Structures are given as structure tokens and as C-alpha cells.
Amino acid sequence: MASLDSPDFSLFQPIGDEATMGREETQGIFRGFGLGLSTNRDAWVHNFSRDSLRVHLTRSIAHYNSVVEDWKAHRSAMPVVGTDDHLKFIPPDDQEFTWEEQNKADLKHGRTIDFHPEYLRASLYRPFVRQDLYFDPTGRLTARPHIVPALFPATGYANRCIVVSADKNTGVSVLVTNLAPNLHLLDNNQVFAFYTYEALNSTEAARSASDGDVVGDYVRRENITDATLAGYRAAYADDAISKWDIFHYVYAVLHHPSYREICRSDLQKQLPRIPQLANFWQFAQAGETLVELHLKYESQEPYPLEDVHASSEPLDERAKFNYYRVGGAMSWTPDRDHSELRFNRNLTLTGFPPEAQDYQLCGKSAVEWVCEHYTCSQDSKSGIWNDANDLRIDGNDYRVSADDARRIVDLIGRVASVSVETVRIASTLPSYEQLEQQVWGRES
Image (cartoon, rainbow, N blue to C red):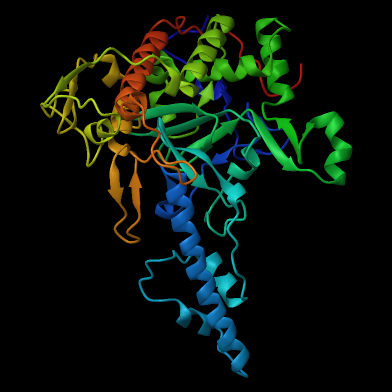
């Protein structure tokens, strides 16, 4: 085995290679990768409430279309219009619509926007923070879709993605998701998916038998290269290794404390490279456990925190919603001790284990991400409220039950459980032992 103290980062296979990405001959583990979704209008297209999202976005689209119609009427009435005359029709400091360059170009050409209910879907906005999203794959209402349309082309097309970010101060952070990832899910992240999707046409239909599967209206292709699979099978002398095993192995290695420490300097400067380490199957199995844990965080058993009530919990089921309602930001008490959390004026949660703070993503614990974003807040420009308490579905009133009333409290407990288990699994990964020969980059 190679020395623990002198790894050669350049010998490891890159998780993705920018120079050759998208090509079959790429040197990366994953053929394609890219940034998460950037909307430039999060307040309009992200919300905890799908009903609120639908109402506000419909209003915004109607406002945009009215500006387009005003411009079209003016253009029709004038024999000559200036190159930038259409811009005069955009209200100054418009609070009803965010005008990106694409929208300004559409205005000039008189193109209106339609609301598409099928664009509504779930997304992972921040670590362990699920929100509904209006995902416009054309980019007209989501400014920079980046790679996301190729990973989640429409509702019902399943995928799993490893999202990676690195920072010189906080080091590497990684999280798996099966939902459309926001660009800032992890800070300016790169997304490595198991599948990519391409819209089906006659050309792809002819090719699909050899390089993908026809799934609905798309050709689905595995994103880990055949060369990578061959390299791993050769390195470990085991033809039973599959691409899913490699996906899970990569996820485990990225959580390995020794890997993060030994390769810290390199990980601050470039995308991760993944070493081939001894005990492949132990890593793969641990990685699969971590993947399932992180994807299914909302169904984990809550950590047994203690509820400290400032006032008695009401018996009326509807009144419980107000009792457990979140308003502004939650706070830790005392400030530097993360064992007690003031949830709201009625409730303090105590007994957080140290591991709940040890599991960090981009410099914050997973529990802190949840506490920071599960609030009721108003966007200063648009005036739109994003209320984590809102449980309405398709216009119906709150689903009145005690479980729903406590759902954010329980979510904090669930993420605390995920944190404890993540730290435990990472601490029990096999020792960091590089294979003498790193086999990758070409068919065997």
C-alpha cells in the first residue's frame, strides 16, 4: 500500500474532467457534470407552498405579458421604433417581475409567457431544505438552468446526484439528492448525476439500443463511463462491481475524514479526485447506507430531544398549529452552545448531541441549515411571503393533525438523527489505504 502521508493527488481519477466532459473518452468518473439551477428570481419560483408559488408566479407572468402587449401596441402604431425603445416600457424598479436579458429580448420580439402547471416540482433548495420550484427548462423564468434539464427533464424522471462544493475555509462538502438542486444548495456546487436524459428524436431512437434506454420521451444514459467501470473491475479484480457500486463508493470516499484531511490543500483548488482504496466493498456498502440516509432524511426517526414548554400545549388540534408555528429565525441558547434551540416563544428544544454540530456542510451544521430556512419570511423587493408553516395543497385548508402541527419540530429531530448517523458511519469507514496502482482512464 502507498504511504498515508504522501498521496499523489494527480494519480487519482478526477470525479469529472472539465477539458473532456461530455465525451465518451473523458478521463473523469462522470462523463457530464455542471452547476446547479440558478434562477435569479428565487422569491418568485421557489416557495414552501405550491399554492403560493402558483398564485404569485401567475401574477408575475400576467404583469410581464401586459408589458409585452403595451409594447406591441406601441410598435404597431409607430412607423419606426428605436433599437432600445422596448426597454422604456419596463417599469422602473419593477416589483412584479425580474427582467433578465432573455426577458428583455423576448419583450422586444413581442413574445409572451404561458404558465405551465407541469413545471411545478419539488427541489432541494438548501441542505435538507425541500421547497417547491417552478422549473422552466427554456430559461425564460429560470435564468440559468445549467445542467439541471439534462438531469431532471420533467416530473417523473428519476435520478440521483452527488453535489460537491469546496471552499478554502470550510473544505469539501458533499450531499446526495434526487431532486433538482439549486446552485447554492452547496455554495456554487458541481452536480454529478448517475443518469443524464436527452430528448427523444429519430436519431436518438436509433442509437438508444446501444448507448441508452428509452424512458418516456427521453433517452436515459448512465453517466459513469464504461472506462471507469472497467478500471475499477481491473483494479479490484472483481467483475461484480457495478456503476451503482462506484457511485456509492465515491460518496463514501468523499465523506472519509482522512481523505478530507490528507487532500485538503488540493480539494481547495480543484474538483475532487477519487483514490482507489483498499476494501472497496466496505466503502460501497457504507456509501449506499449514507445515500439512503440522506435521501430519506424526512422519514428518519427523530432524535430524542427534550421539549421545554413555556406554556401548556393546547388540546385543540387547530390551535396546535399556532403553538408550533415558526416565525422569525430560531436561536441557540446560550449563543455559543448548540445543545439548546429556542424554536419559538412557546418551545425550546434541548439535548442536541455534539454530533449534530459535527456534521457540517459549507461551514454550517445540517441542523443549522434547517433552522435558518424553515421560517416565515418576506422578500423585500417582491413582498412575497415564504412560509414554512403553510401546509395547504391545491387550495385546501391545513391538514389538521398533531403530527402536521409538529412537523418542523420533528424535522429538526430527524436531521439531528441523520447527523449523528452520518458522523458514526464516516468514523467507521475503513482505514485510508491507497492501492499501489490506480487503474483508470482507459478500457482494460
